[in-house]
Length: 290
Ligand SMILES: Nc1ncnc2c1ncn2[C@@H]1O[C@H](COP(=O)(O)OP(=O)(O)OP(=O)(O)O)[C@@H](O)[C@H]1O
Picture 1 (cartoon, rainbow, N blue to C red):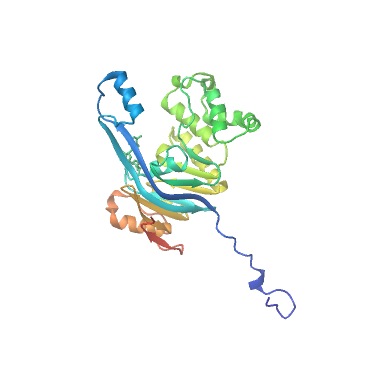
Picture 2 (cartoon, helix red, strand yellow):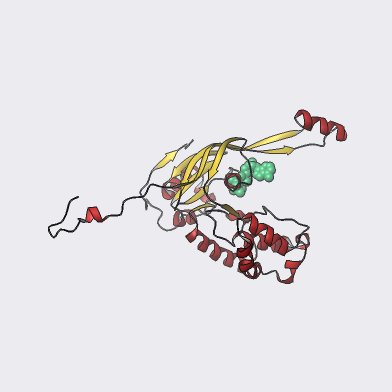
């Protein structure tokens, strides 16, 4: 140890020992497919049973290969912006991290509870809003006591009044979305997944949900944000991942990734860059990532 003349440890020795980065999400060579049945099937129930038992392909069935071999590791404390054109595979990737979709190849590891804001993971249309609050809160890992404590706050946030006692299939799509958001945002998850395309509601609800997202972001261990707002990505994220045609194109410093993305795509079609558009953060930027 190098002591100063007065015997105290030097400034170098008093620096906190750097902690090793703690991985929270590992996406390892992940492929994700949707299966679509394109045309009416022939042969009735017997043929369907035979196909199921013998695992024969369904006639007219197509597969959409939405994510193609993506790999990266996310760490505690990171806010990761996911960018890319429409249909690139961004939302699909988030669904896999949230555990709502199984990879057809590869593996997703998560440490802690992952919650995707805005998705009806545990919603049952025939059940009432309050029954769905119970189910949804259990699904995101809340204990019965926590649910009792948070119940009124969830109802207030959703703002759907007495409809909370009615079956959800009597709700307008906006009311359903508000209740889903209120449930998903009731607890600070370890891994917060925000798909901006899914946040919905009227102007007042959007303002309140944006405020709640900010609070959750401040407290979650790792945040993923899918957004076409490139200014938002530059301003709020510590890292960005560019996905295109289901593949990871670039992973690294948000300014570097957004700059490269804007260079490739016609700037006129993209959101204007936010303040601090030049190399604000040092960091590594890697092409490919898989
Ligand atoms: N439920 C689904 N069933 C079948 N195909 C789907 C489904 N959801 C998405 N896809 C397809 O998967 C691909 C990736 O879609 P995804 O929604 O992940 O893209 P995205 O990058 O989030 O797009 P956007 O920016 O428009 O929201 C697209 O070809 C899309 O058509």
